[in-house]
Each structure stands twice: as structure tokens, then as C-alpha cells.
Amino acid sequence: MHIPTGPLSVPITLLLMLSIGSLTTAQPTHKPVTDPTPAQSSLTEAQILTISPKANTCDNAPAEGECATAATAAKYTAQSFDQYKVTSKAEQAALVSLMAFESGDFKYNKNHFPGVAGQGTRNMQSPTFNKKYASSIPALADQLPSVSDSPADLLDLLRGNETYDFGSGAWFLTTQCTSDVRSALQKGDEAGWKRYISECVGTTVTDDRKAYWSRAVDALGV
Ligand SMILES: *[C@@H]1O[C@H](CO)[C@@H](O)[C@H](O)[C@H]1NC(C)=O
Picture 1 (spheres, protein in one colour):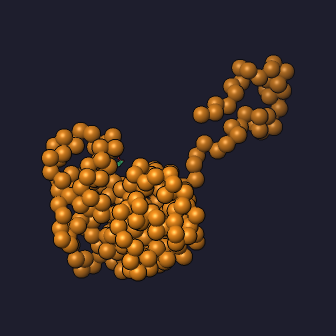
Picture 2 (tube, rainbow, N blue to C red):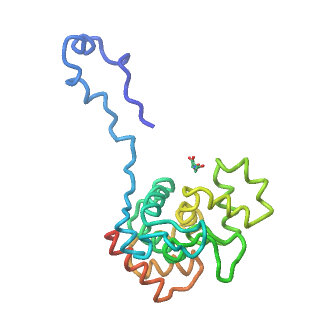
Picture 3 (cartoon, rainbow, N blue to C red):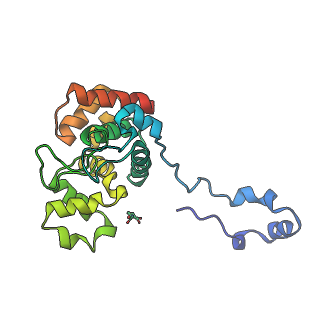
């Protein structure tokens, strides 16, 4: 990290000028070249609703304790982009559409059909990946031993905090996909997205899945 030069290294003459002149005239030489605060990713409720119109409400949600509204999805998904440094719009669109599709418009964060124990979070990843993911989170280190023998309990630990529940998609992309797949995906075209789905997520492209991706590409302006 760049540390601005301290006043001790400033020549005496400049110090004298500083003491009698305005501070602002000398400030440019003290400013770091780059802004240390990274830009925050933005994702709006309206964008989520374009992708998942049914995420407008959690009234009459089909599974107790699993539904998230578009506002919640927007907030925590944007947070995950920042945490895992997913800055490419194309990657962001692929992630939001994957989560919207896999979670049934954010109504679910557990697998129900057929009901694989431990499969879940918003990208509906399998128990093996949930275990890897949970192990990567320092804040869960203390609780992990007590759930490591039960995939369902481990999933509940992840589901219990929106940061983790919505963070799994970006974690998976940035830690489990090859740089080759990511480069292709970042181009924003259908061929790259298909490679991400088939070669990294490991599932098949269907018309329904593609419709979510197309809406996400439009909504995020890829
Ligand atoms: C969820 O996890 C985040 C990141 O570790 C933490 O800052 C936050 O306090 C947690 N929220 C709750 C409700 O435990």
C-alpha cells in the first residue's frame, strides 16, 4: 500500500512556506496517486426484479425461512461482488442469473427436489462445495467442527447469515473455475456463458436457464 510522504521528508523551505501559507496549496504533493477506497459494486432491486419478477414479495413463500426479496438479494449479492472482487459485468450477470434460476427466484436456499441434504445456499451448490466454502470463511472457524459431520447442519450455518448465503456464487466462480473459463465468460457472449455453465458449474444449458441469463445481461447492461 502506498503511504504518502510524511512532513519529515519535506524540505525546510517548504515547511516554512506551509506554516505561513494555505495548507491546500501544498496538498497535491501529499495525496496518494490512487484512491485507496475501491469502487462499490452496485446492484439494484429493480435489476433483480427484471431478472426475477417473482422476487417482489415473500408473502406466501413456498418454503419457510428460505425466501429473500429482491431488495435483500440485491444488497447481499452486490456485497459478494466486492468481497470476491468480481468486477466484470458479464461475470456479475452470469452469477445473478445463476442464483435467481437455482434458488427459484430467491424462494429457496435448500435443495427440495429431490431434497439432497446439505445442498443449498443461493447458487444451490452441492454439499462438498459447501464444506469447502465454509472452511474458507475465517469467521466460521469456531463453529465448523460442530457441524462438519452433518451436511444439513453445515448448510444451515451458511444459510444463517445472508452474507454467506449470497456469497457462495462469487466464491465458487473465483475459486473453482479455471482462468480460461473466466476469460471466456468475461467476454459477455453466449459461448462464454455456456462454457461457465457446462465446464465449471457442471450442468446443462436449457432454454429456461438461458432466459434468466438473457434478462440479466439486459438488466446489468453487459
Ligand atoms: C454475518 O457475517 C458477516 C461476515 O462475517 C458478519 O460481519 C456479520 O456480523 C454476520 N451477521 C450476523 C447476523 O451474524
